[in-house]
Each structure stands twice: as structure tokens, then as C-alpha cells.
Amino acid sequence: MSAAIDELTVNWEEDGQLKVKEVAKHVLSKGAWATVMFLYVEMDPQTKEYRDPKISIRRYRKRGDQYMFQSKFNISSAAQGKEIARMIHEWYKDGDGESAE
Image 1 (cartoon, rainbow, N blue to C red):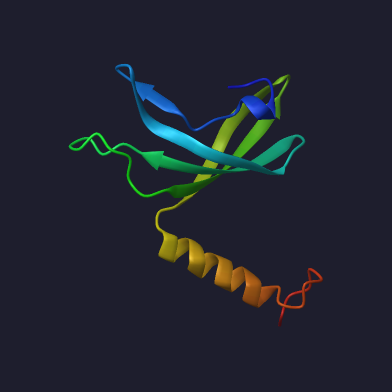
Image 2: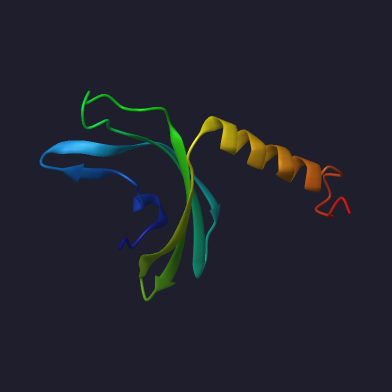
């Protein structure tokens, strides 16, 4: 839980090691429900080096003065991310928010 959107992170530390490291963050929406997109890397347990970056899109619900995690969708590879971006571009190709269909 976090009181401010700027404090939300995907950083995760275990036994003094940063296992998941946030590389970048972009707030997609804020309010009673916030949507935040994180670029992050995970540490490989064998090599102790960070793997290729992934993206996580997370939803938080504000209750009182705290943001509480609700759900997430992880984009696990560059190929998957590019395919998602391609389809969004195709569906909104007119650029005006109207569906292409």
C-alpha cells in the first residue's frame, strides 16, 4: 500500500538483494482507480544478472488515503509487447479514439 501514486513501485527485495528492479514508470490514469505501467527487470537466480526487461500494467484502488493493488497484466517479452502495440495501433488507426471497425 502507498499513500501517493509516485510511491508505487514494483521493486522487490529479498535477503538484501533487489530481485525485481523498476527501470521506468508511467502513470496511465489516476483517481479512485489508478493504472500504472512499469518497465522492470528480474534477477536470474543462477547468474545473479538481470534478465531482459518486461512490462507490467497494474491497477490500484484508492481507499481512504492509500492505494491498494488490485490486478496486473505482465507483458513478458518484446515480441508480445510489439504485437499488443501493433493491434492497438490497428484498432485505433484513425487516431481519434474511434474503433477501426
